[in-house]
Image (cartoon, rainbow over all chains, first blue to last red; front, side, top):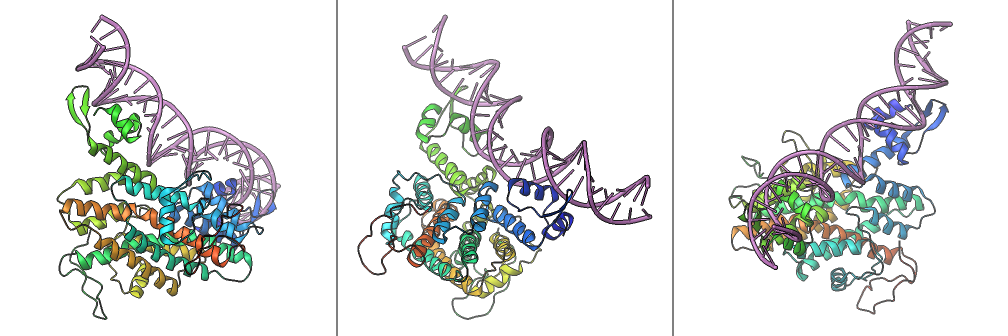
Length: 225
Length: 225
DNA sequence: CAATTTAGGATAGTGACGCTATCTAGTCAA
DNA sequence: TTGACTAGATAGCGTCACTATCCTAAATTG
């Protein structure tokens, strides 16, 4: 297909496609002449992926490039790729292998996980815990254990759900799964807050999730905003 | 204290403090003269909060302003404030009350939660699910249930942990808790991935979390990057 | 076969964002 | 009185993710 068709199919503007081509995010089409190239479904899919990583996950273009290179490179080792992918996710933190991350270490020890400061998520955790502390809401051990148990359940499932066929798809699955499902988790957590809050704190008559099997309740008169 | 001291105590540059004052994020100090004002601990704490929301949570300055106004406004209703706070979190989505969010609705129905399209997190969930779908990794029912159970555990704890004394602190707690702990969850999930992946996929001899009580294992020779 | 459309490549410009730098003028301690 | 400090106003900067404009040339259409 021609560029114009790619524009239509993907919903991405020509200017942006040219930009992604320049930046090396989108692979060039097969040149049919000096002034014409042929694109296919892989280009459509790649554009969807680029937009998802940029718009939904919130990754900067340069980090998207890293993740895509990781997926494309058949030599990458699955386990190492996971670490690489994580370090490309926002908020980006430049980890210092020499540095100590006391809050993260304490947290991981409490959760019974190994503390490997080289994992890119360790400085991310440290910074997040430090931020919570600095605003007067330090992470309690109790909360840590609740959260730790919850993420472990997700993690176990995520890893087991990685297809065991060829490395390529397994790689793509693990790399993208970490990134793509993160906004889903965030949105679900926010909705869980709303749901629990409506049950515990909301006005009487607010629609709530019934504790046991029961009837759907009527919609609220005004939106909870 | 004077501005220079506030700069020192907070670690925020004078130029940035002036910027936050201009933007209405930081409340002005008590003017002692035409050219001098007095700041206190509340200003130090506020600056820490501003930085945490901007740097760690990744909120744009204008959204930070909304969240701070929400915290400062004593008239706000706790339950409504939760929704407001959520809508200020990135990635920002302008929800259309008229619109239907089929993926989000199906997901919530499956989880047994009420579908209230007015909740700001509903369009966020819709977009996240659509993005997963568009890159060829649609959210399976199984994964949805695992995630749903996990976030519910966190949500229940979060809401119960809100202090029941004065409205002001409860408000601050619920609003900030949603935002501040989100990066913690993200980092913990990434670490859970690493931890589980190391156990299931990692090279032999890699440090792993023992299944039962056991010895700490030695650090790896090279970093998993 | 001429005219129009479309494509590719290069380069410069745009608008939002989060500061940052400079300037002015007033104040206060030494 | 001199020099450091301050508030307030305004303009500028660097990054980011595009976006718009040229130019050239091939391909398509009438």
